[in-house]
Length: 325
Ligand code: GRG
Image (cartoon, rainbow, N blue to C red; front, top):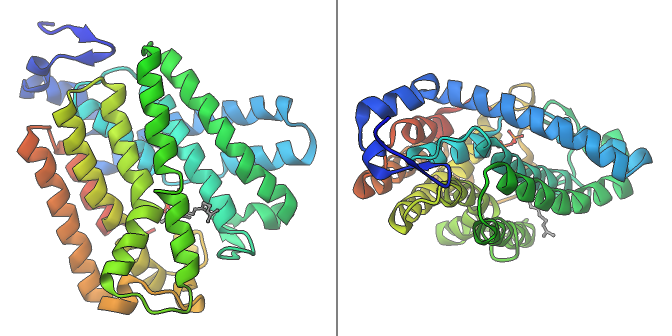
């Protein structure tokens, strides 16, 4: 090997060498392989955390925590994070632990989103929602407890990656700001307030970017921070993440209107039932699909402009808008 490692990251001369890159990423060069890898690694890590949290939180709440952590998701955020890390030269397999922290925050948001005081849903990831499998107070506690669990998962990830404390601090700030009032929580708040109101496209974009986009963008940025990439590459990942984050929610709006509950593993048609403004209600299905595709193409341009290899991230951007669940 000609290059050398800096904090688990390969130097730029290696990143720019296409033959080296293809060796590094050949096994994950398409979206389905990346997602399968992310699922395998992250599910194993979360299963270990599920066992561990049950020794700290006993009884029914511990069981419900384990149930939520072990409920299988697509792990799109994890795949994006791992692909972003590799795109800027990261090579450690321990990056999956950072992805597990993001998926833990995502899982908390789904547990709370499904509660009767929010979207009130019975089905999630093909299984009963946490408050249906257990009860509302237990599921409420589970959601809150998953936030500090995410902090523990992230701290362990930084140790596994042998990252300095300042990098852990930067990652923690990135993740919890994205998950907070200026990101996911704020977006959900706007979304709840918008029920039974008609939003225009700008209003809708503001909700989607915060509610769904912020955590997806953050997953991409975290890949860059964990690789200790230059700021210009992290900015490109942020631009990419912002576009695919919005595209993800536009595709979600389309799927909610066009797919079945069996296909989605969650109740289809929920947006119409809750009288929510969505890309489909504002633009119709076909224009919403076209908008998602345009956002995905635009996302890749952020990477190309900064010279960040866009193979795997490009494949994921396409998957995000073409997915069937
Ligand atoms: C206190 C106001 C307040 C909010 C708490 C509940 C909450 C925080 C935020 C909800 C955010 C949310 C549910 C956004 C929707 C994101 C979305 C499209 C989820 C579906 O993602 P997938 O398809 O799910 O990746 P899987 O199951 O595959 O992981």
